[in-house]
Length: 316
Image (tube, rainbow, N blue to C red; front, side, top):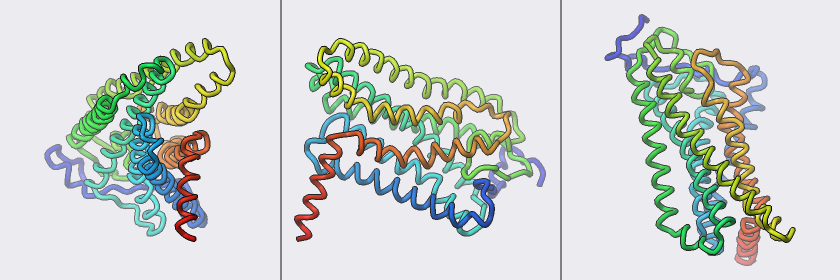
């Protein structure tokens, strides 16, 4: 196959996903492992959404943002993991051109959406601790809805920008993707077009949607830390920290993997280290979020116990 013309790039009918670097005899074990992790991710985050919907005590701005984060985590994991599991089971590594582009779009979309939602949650914690007397006035329903709506719109615009630019590229004979999903950087390497514009947009937009929210989170927690140090009682400090512990854990887990993945230069070659980082981000992070919020959050544990008690009463 010769290099395609721009106006005919859709003739690349499919790509081949090489998947994880796993030995054939280990496929069954890893399939069961990732299937279990995916089901736990979906059920765990669905449980969080259910608890927030059912328990009136959780009808607060923090849990409003958390319910959207849980939905985003379910969707984000569903973008890559089911296809990976299907490829492992059927040994069919192909993915259509349209399917690959769609997967890349939603991967970018939910990555950025998580970023903005975590930033909104950091602002909520800042207001709750630094301005507790004005919390209900500032974090009113209209503002919470606006923050979530803007997060969805900006995430969609960002993903659409990258996707439209990618569809303008031509692809050469090599259609092999050394990954378990259609990674944006790998697709750029497969192109035989000039990708300098794509790389410029990755850098500028990536700088905006990753570093700016991270800066906002760090500034928020800087103010929170300064406020906590002024609290005279140890009990008050522990209470303030408990409201931030879960969010801080998720932020650390999120940024610990996404910064390295997002800013890897497109000229670098793929490596097992990159694949492992991707697995951490796409599979492990959405899996751990429900456990972090359930085990470290007194309100969530109380709502869960209440739900189990109701279920036990109804079953009798």
